[in-house]
Image 1: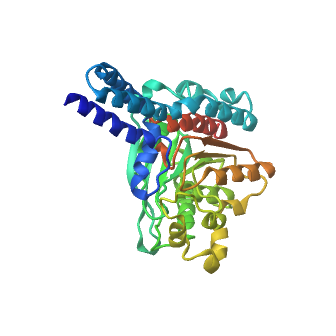
Image 2: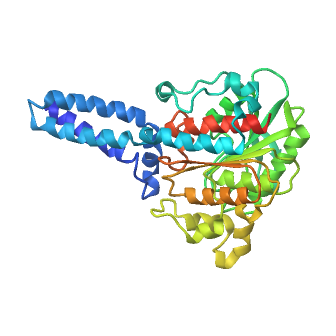
Length: 391
């Protein structure tokens, strides 16, 4: 009977390991497709354990052969992200040298050298987590109330008083859900690096459609400008960072005139060209991209084409834009990496500084697992980019 349980366990682990390479066909399976590549070191250990148990059972039960076969297959699948890591990191490093220069660690200054991650991947961190020191955290700071909707921000400040560069962080959620409390681990990490992180809110669709969300971001930037000194922020050194829907808003705010001069923008898997994205949908399409866009923009492109264009960061490519870092997952079937890559080429053609990093095994929202394989890579280059841009 115990060999049967071992066999069943190996099959279940194979089922989870498959998601290290497979995209999710439905919304309900997204958690597995997003999470499996990020916990692949754990899966490797689990598969090795079951492989060992299967080898011990070979001479006692046919189930031992099943376990060994299944575990070997699962081991190959779960090792896929790590097997691709070195090549992906080399490409990212080459991109950084092209964008910033070979001496970017020295350019970034002491903040990076004393507190930055020393490697793009630390295996031990996959198991123990990424440590962060205590920071000052102030939630629910009101900054506006458009149409009676209270908008708030959460402030993350370094432990010691001072004046620091700022990062305005904008959450994702298909423009329909989310709060400033999202991605708190990242915000605390960056505050410990010597930044003031402003995690802002905005009005949600369908009750409020574009451009309400962009207007709210601009209002938050106006609030930051007026209260920078009170919150220990250097208003001359501000970067925008967004995820998914929040990345689309961050790019729009960075590429258009606003209350602040933005020094840099970081885009984690954000929609770029909403008009083409409506027609060129991913396959599979777990979130129903067209429905999300129609809810956000108030109709189809045939009905509100100009709104699709106005909501597309690709519409605002021009010379002299802030330096941009675009990070996308190669397994993402919500916002495909090809859109980010096309945007990077267009920005570069307009003589802008831009870095594009594609993480081949990563899915949408890969950084939800903060110590995951993909986020370690993204974090390594994000902190270097910001240390350089906000130096």
